[in-house]
Image (cartoon, rainbow, N blue to C red; front, side, top):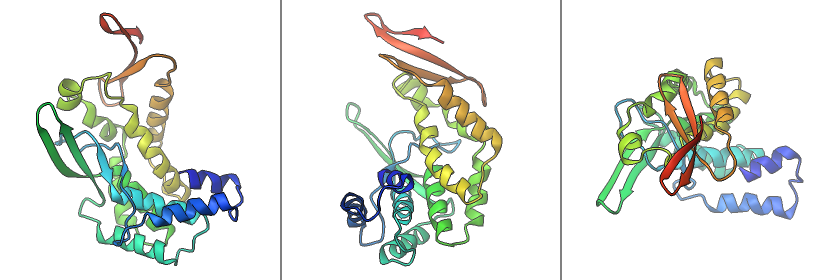
Length: 243
């Protein structure tokens, strides 16, 4: 993301600092063409209770490809080609996935699962589209899921967020922030999600701005109705300061 920001700001691409960033990213590419996994903070499917850390090599690889292209790397370079082949080889029927795991030392709960990832799929589509690949089928799959109702579903009556990890310990903004950057790249390729979705995400991010020694509790009451509470910690525990 730093490389993308510098490239778009007009920072000299031939400078030593800029080229050092390019070389650093390229040095992290694995033999299989992938780049290190990044946390996607994703959206679970309706029947899935998996929630905590979501790591995706596909998302990391898609983001790395986009960064290198922004930096002026040739689409035909060996690094870009190997990364593209990794994405193509690792696409599933649910397109690109995240490795989702829960590690809870106190209970001995060590669980791992793989789940379809909206964020990883968005990054992968954006990268492959930039390289000229036909991603119409993948885009149709993703666009169908980028609706306000679908983006809220995982957080209504969810066992982990409601019982094991109740708010305010889990900040619900992260999944919506996570998908913003790949949506920007998709929009630049004339692949725009429904306006209602953009308005919903924009509203949620605006309403959950906060400052000072507070945390937020974000509760979805229905598909697009939500309540935001600023919570402060006192001697009696968490108390609501503002709703």
